[in-house]
Length: 175
Ligand code: ADP
Image (cartoon, rainbow, N blue to C red; front, top):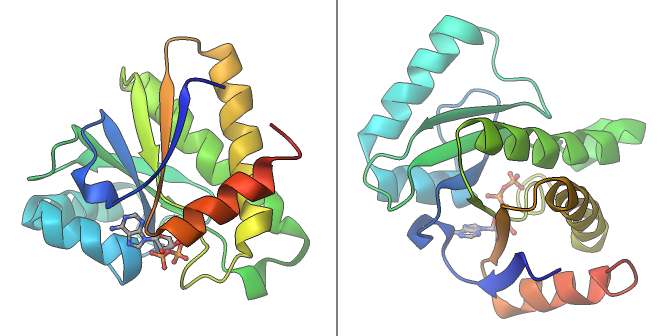
């Protein structure tokens, strides 16, 4: 699929319409890619997250859901915050919840008029999702969506080459 770009890099530097954040349900920032996005993007993103939290999700954003905010000082137009499943807690629902993160983020980006979206490897860091299993889910949801939305493009951005190579190997059987 030529509208999928698989690369190594820092997602905060991606010049796309929307970057996706592997957030936690509090939307108040955290470690990993979440911390990197808030550090690089500055306080405007956190302010917007606080507002979303107060107005729409006082109990926190549920796992598998996505919301959009401004992107502060980042080169993208939007940050889409999604809450991935915690692997040792999600049981039989893990794959559906992870798929939902990708699907809802893509749908939201589409509604915002975005033609390109960058994803990190949601849930595969602190949340412990096995990287090979997560790769197949991410790739399947994204390919399906892109087949139905021919004017869109997706970047998968990995923090290091070994994660990128693992992703490429994992999807070999399905791509
Ligand atoms: P989660 O809590 O959903 O597991 P993490 O942020 O811990 O989220 O990890 C998700 C993935 O994001 C991991 O594979 C991690 O290596 C990667 N990551 C961390 N920082 C960045 C970054 N700046 N750009 C791209 N990917 C990143």
